[in-house]
Image 1 (cartoon, rainbow, N blue to C red):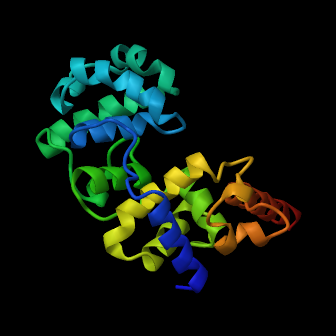
Image 2 (image 1 turned 180 degrees about the horizontal axis):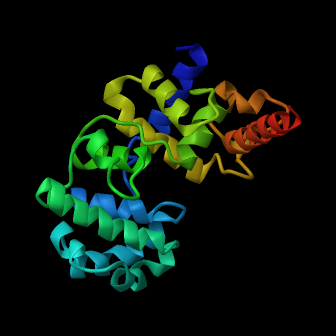
Image 3 (image 1 turned 90 degrees about the horizontal axis):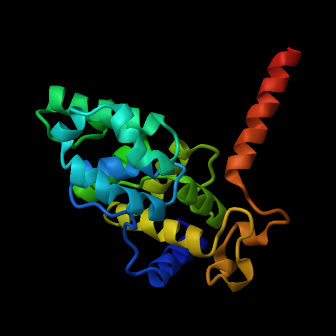
Length: 230
């Protein structure tokens, strides 16, 4: 770990000592449903929707008995209709294969419809106490801008962060980066001038602001163009 990386992690810890989940949930089932709904949707919106969902479908067995068509009006404001289908089908699988209990391993969770590594890691970290670093768009952006990672994919970013950050801090570091991404290091217009981490930030000392998502897309397009020419 470099001196700047140490300073960045210490700075994040100092800035956000009480950082924690902003989604509302109280058990693994609620964590799973809320996190599926939160994909490309704000936590605030999800928190408006889930009370009615959890009231009428309080556990996987209740959810498994409904249909995506019945659930969709509850969650419509969270985006894609596929979210309703994924939630219902995931709960049916939980009932059929796991006795109605949300599984507690990465391998089992990622078998569920609509559940990728990020969602699975959220469930593991905040419902089962398993250290994990869920990499969403904020973590991906902030980690690469601050110099904690140097990666073009969320998977590689996760791997590099796990190697860099002590395991005991994984879950909390996830929240530090989310809080920083939402409050300071915005996607389009980061507040660099007022950022306490600027002296140690990789992106702050570059001519062009790092946008890892855009850079990954640019490189993928270049590879596609080279393949077409060949």
